[in-house]
Length: 439
Ligand SMILES: Cc1ncc(COP(=O)(O)O)c(C=O)c1O
Image 1 (cartoon, protein in one colour):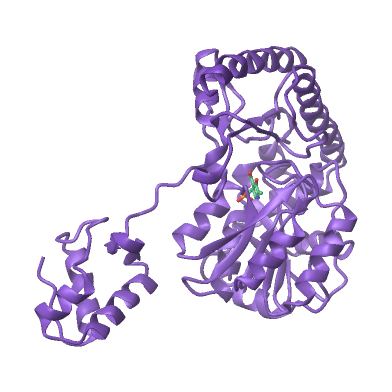
Image 2 (cartoon, protein in one colour):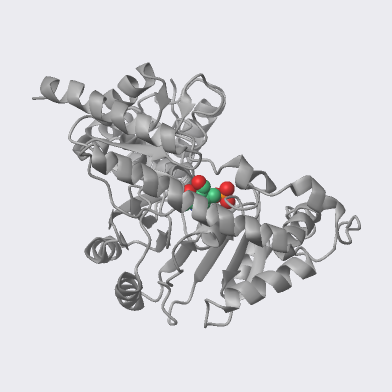
């Protein structure tokens, strides 16, 4: 490897050239600062600055004592794993397909005429619906727009206001895609612990004191724990955030229409930059790739610059379908049934687990039940797989698996009564087998 240059810019540029030509592969360790400075005949600060620029640009990463290494594309855990295998899928985090409406039928209803470049980015009917829906929950002035799902919206919101290396407060454990978004974009995460009522106030306060510039919070049906903010907890979080009005607040209300819990807002009226994101993935279908976003004016202007009718707008066909479905009373009834079914299925699993002596929070909301364990979640996942069940190991969702006690996430969205019974019994047997071995 021949790094050259006498200024920080030249040295960083030379490393980038070597990465581009493949001479420096992902995870290759760069020479120690002192050694490279001696070799190039420059001050150590010059090399240190070059390395810092490479880290800021996402080309390299610092590994503490391991030095500075060329960054690799992160290996990310994703949702949806478990689909289509031989095991009974309690791993995927998916909604029940039976509880999603027929989107093709909706495409044919109403009036859709093919828009061309330059049309307004948001379907007028959908915008009107979204405005009325958001107005029930938001007292500040807001504007609405449409993004390609909640994950896309969150990434755009963070990119609109933050820079690489900035700290983002997120729940710990956390939704896998949020972990992925932070890692892919070079943000640092400040973990905020969660209990049965959502983000813990002390943990949020600590994350903000650590310098978090944004907070991403799931107000209900937190994935993976199923926690929803109580009114009191939301007020506590709001009071803490009121002391940090410059912090971007993103509320990811992903389960909205099918949540069994009310929405409690954490964004204080004094927060300058904020967004409430409502994906339709859980109640109209993940393939619509659509989320409605309400945000302050400056934030919408920044997002619109990249979601405009000339560039990457969300297809009006998808918006048309979403609007038709959201107006349809049969779909409202389906949502009513879905809300009851998801609550019943997770409640049933919780009950069966309790009957087996397995402790879990009693009323989770959403598609998943989170089980904290005193044994390694991975061993439990393997043992359950041997018995025909796919679940996800908890370490994927936590910030620091090394200090985390075991856990598993069980997707309950399609679980029948007999499956809940059988699963709980097998799970208890697995725990019984594993515990003596773990002392
Ligand atoms: C917390 C959370 N946010 C958002 C989503 C959905 O994101 P999207 O709208 O990108 O499908 C999910 C799906 O599992 C989720 O668990």
